Image (cartoon, rainbow, N blue to C red; front, side, top):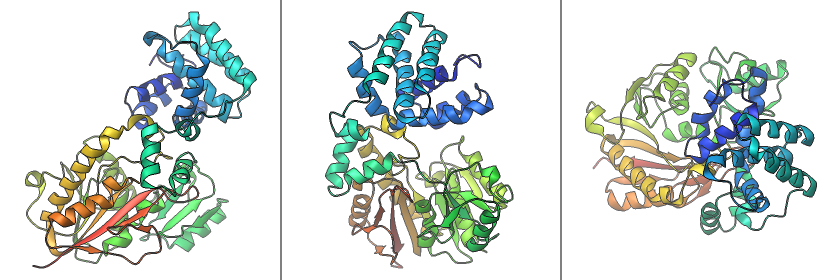
Length: 433
């Protein structure tokens, strides 16, 4: 990227180009935000997320409006026009400003020979309005493989899942039970003029009526609350925590569930948090420090137990496995561009391998909670079914909870447009034999 003198739309186009080339928004957006003035950062972020959310719909329209695809060296202008189309279709930005400033951004990207094309395409788009979608992937703005997979797996729910994926996710908090009762913190929010309600299923959850910067939340810096989706908070209700237990959070970064475990039960013997990524472990440490909590952090591949395990079994293990993240697309719309159907089978192999490795280090009588943020059965209840066939001594526990769908081997939460993300949980116990 070419520095702060670039118009923010040009920077947005480069972020989108990064996503098309396989970079996540969490990788490509932070450095981009440093290149614009602070007051422009919310708009840049909103446009990058929105352009990814509606990418497949916008891209179909743009391809129809171009007589031929742009040459590869000019591909950045395709992304620039996608950014402009997003604003024309989904923002309240005046169309004249979008048109004029996009042409200027085209020049700033060293493509002055394409300003006529950009101007013509966008003026036609403004004049003619958004076309009717030709098919379901265009209408719901998802890759066709994902639409077909959801239609197959969830014949009665696939349209609702796709619509929920395109909704803006709510901002949900987890109240630190060591510091506040939920009702008391709701009163703090009310006193601060912040509208919020208690979550339906998570005992310490609060959902805000509108997202806001965390520094506006009472006592945030002092560890009163953390930002965490309601579905992710449910892990502590399944672990059956008790004082004296040794607990493992495998695949722990960024640490939200590690902290939730420590908040949920005083006097645990030890909580060990493992993550393979050296880049992500500092986030776990930051969250622990803000909340004044203590855990043993290890950088390691959880499955390679011979490299990190000290030989003492764990009473409780939370295994939140790497997955397609198909249940959190509304929070990470770039997943639509980054994920491939061919990813699912290798991910399932990793998930089953991690489950087998964690089982070996679970104490007889201990409990393991398997979790994903996926809505694909291949990563969820089918993994549990495969594991139960392979593993003697594994007992499936069916918790009596008011949420999710009983899949026979675990419970599935589908994304809800007004509350929780899509998540899957299964509870296994190791018998004493």
